[in-house]
Amino acid sequence: MRKKIVAGNWKMNKNFSDGLALFSEVINMANDELHNSQQVIVCSPYLHLHSLVQLNKGNTKVALGAQNCHQAESGAFTGEISADMLASAGVQYVIIGHSERRQYFAESNATCAEKINIALKHHLTPIYCIGETLQEREAGTHFDIIKTQLAQATYHLSAQDFVKLVIAYEPVWAIGTGVTASSAQAQEIHAFIREQIAWQYTVAVADEISILYGGSCNPKNADELFAQADIDGGLIGGASLKSRDFIDIAKAFN
Ligand code: 13P
Image (cartoon, rainbow, N blue to C red; front, side, top):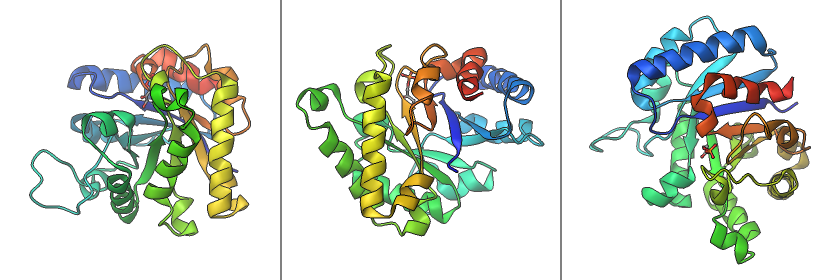
């Protein structure tokens, strides 16, 4: 059975003390209110991660993730962070290929492929983000875009490694805009992604992969989104900055 996952992407928000306070609230609410079968992940800024890992000791309901990593093992890459550093600090997940990285930091599918490789090498679970822009959707090229984002960054993996991934479908036009993809639009793409994976690998592999939806997900729309057959959870931006909203989204699975 594939995992039900709700992951928060704090992006570049929350100073150190505010981040610690928010995370403490998340742990307490998760422990009190969530089932064991759900995985809640917090992807904070790098600076906070080690302290959050320490705060989280003894808890099983929440795991920590980074929002990016560099593709090289180590070296002269001023300002960057390696997968080895993240893993050695107790981080378990890493977001790769978020549309903001693609847009503002020129990350290509080829770079994402390298980042996925180094993440897997260090036993981090990549949360690989794909999704079309509004322009691409309006031009009717969204299926092709998603196909290419999948193929170029992940199809070099063996089936054994591919099943270690989490995929997040985040239509760029729904990120931070308050416009959510309808549950039918999201389900259509999630089913398409699973079908592509089944063609490339096997139906069993496709069935094992958690595919998250991201883009203006909130406590009001989470129920309907998560009720779709191929939506296994969410990657949450704005609403993950409020503990109550974030946990209420996770409770949409209850
Ligand atoms: P919002 O939930 O703020 O739309 O952001 C989604 C996102 O980009 C998560 O990675």
